[in-house]
Amino acid sequence: MNLPLTLSQFLIKQLARHPERDGLVAIISDLSTIGKIISNHTNRAGVVDMIGSAQKMNIQGEEVKKLDVFCNELCKDYLRQTGNFAAMASEEEDEVVDMGEFGKEAKYIIAFDPLDGSHNVEVNLPVGTIFSVQRLLNQFERTDERQFLQPGRDQVLAGYILYSASTVLVFSWGDGVYEFTLDQGLGEFLLTREKMSVPAECAIYSFNEGAYRYLGDKDKKFIDYLKEKKSCSLRYVAAMVADVHRTLIKGGIFLHPAVDKKGTGEYKGKLRLNYEAKPMAYLVEQAGGFCTESKGNLLDLPGESLHQRVPVILGNKDIIEYYLQNNLI
Ligand code: F6P
Image (cartoon, rainbow, N blue to C red; front, side):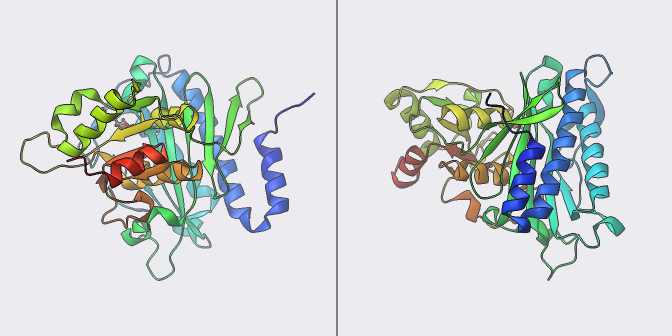
């Protein structure tokens, strides 16, 4: 009988082969525990009064949901006590969070979106947790924002946990992309995919079509090209974790390009560089795809501020190269 490896078995093997990964092995194990707890809460959200607004806005002016608050506190408290992180940044926190005494010996920092797409909870659609781990830079204070302005290329671990029909943990630490699926009965994550690879065929585009009228000409032409020349079908969940997961497995292009909603001629991206764009770009590149903010490789983009937003176009490498190289204006 060919039984899939449990995450624990996989991590023990990794540790034997790569003893230098000990810190990252511990981090994945801790994140998997967080994933089990959040999975349990999102499943029961309707019966444990976890649906709806927390009656406050976050630093980005978005409504905070009750589950956002729960997941953020859980990630903060749980990860703090592991001692693996010197500092953390969360989409739900205004500033960098100091790990205090717990983080004194830590070598890493972590940025996370505790519950991406949380608007989906009340309609029972997919949501996720996204994480990005980088090395602590010794030239700066632990809570210096510049710790989090390192380019995505320097991530040592990135991934997400998707809470959907099943709960999956997807991550990479630089040798391909792994997927583990939570067996709810066993309470264990089991290895279900390794060396994930964005398929060569590009049959899907994933984009909020309602925003088409706010796009610049180049992005409009690219979407027209995907529809008319590539005959792509539209699939859009509006939770980045779910849309990227599908892109990794089924291929295609996910787009959240810059928009000008006010008609001022100023085009802006929506997705957060630290909590969404960087980790997803890392995974997609590890799976043979490509991610751009519209001009170059997003992984080479230096950060400007903690909560910086950027446009994101990711997926099939050949098609994104076409987008970057051809003058679509
Ligand atoms: O940033 C939060 C988020 O929900 C992402 O997960 C998702 O890709 C995006 O916003 C959806 O945005 P829109 O509703 O503008 O299409």
